[in-house]
Image 1: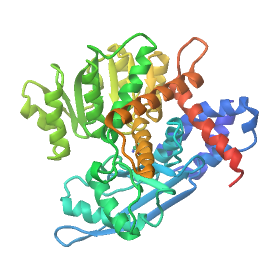
Image 2: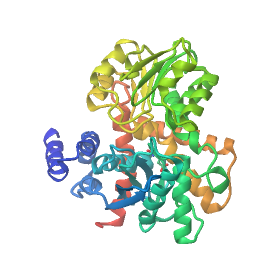
Image 3: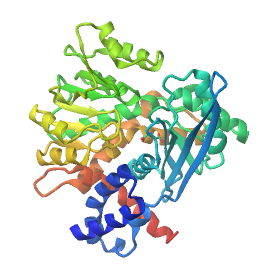
Image 4: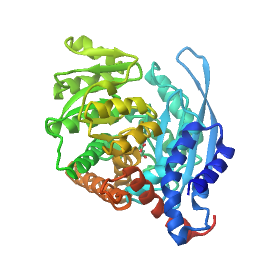
Length: 447
Ligand code: GLU
């Protein structure tokens, strides 16, 4: 088996040798899915995984725009249309200086499995740009988004490819992108999700990724008869996912000790309560400030510049910032300090070494493609509402989100439970996600 996996990965590396994040994401899937393929005849000899690692289409384009001083800038735009076997391409847009083909291919690849897990008919895609919205004026962000959509609009559509937000793309950016799409096509359709409430957006979509991550963690804890009440929770990030994960933890009676951004983390040993969280939401979403400002407002708390929050003792850790933010050493520290559950709110925040440590210690560990699927699942619900031209209540959407997260948890158990009763959620998510897409690919033939 080892040899089969190695031979497969050698082929992937030959073609994508310069794309480390993509290779990391594929390796994790190959290790769990290739043994499954070997045991299930219908997938033998069909090279399904090899077909799945090759994007159906990879678009890269120039985005030229003019800043407030009249200077012309050039960024690179991308859309990776990874797999459409079970539905139109679906996945976010990321605007961040680190964006490149490797990062977007890893995200698009994970998205295929994640979207399949939601049980909704959505294929996988991802896109974005190396444009950095930080420090730009609203007008500059608008001009960039309009220029970006001028090209992207040729390749997307409500039945073809439905982008959404991700890091650096929130309600403001989705508004500008939607406005330009509508103008070019002269049609009002659900071509993007994460839209504003008054123009086709779904209730709960902003909260969904964070809430879903906590719902998933709740299901995992339930298998051990544990809940969130009075648990110490360490959260990284302070964007959309982290904010709403924190909100849900508070609603369930847990204590949130940390939040972070790319420059450092804040530690509030009294707990970040609802008032303090409201301050953080205003700071990040309206003032677009840094998390370090928290200690000016709440002087009895601490700020650790350039550090990650993983050495703060906790029961539950929710990495909600970005890829590879939690390494093997961080995992060892978390385990040593008594952490019993890690649920990823971000995409691939734990390195392979960290996952290895979590599995060795047999603690509850959920990979992002399972635990953060609530965001895209609610995007799927937004698409349904748009197609039906109706809008569900907050309670209706939240109930559906809860049911979907529960379903994903059950699928992980079905495919990931090992002989000793331990659930390997990585294996469970990969295989459950694979089966649905692979079966559709088999049915549709070699295309
Ligand atoms: N960017 C989110 C994710 O990683 C959401 C994508 C979407 O709603 O299409 O799943």
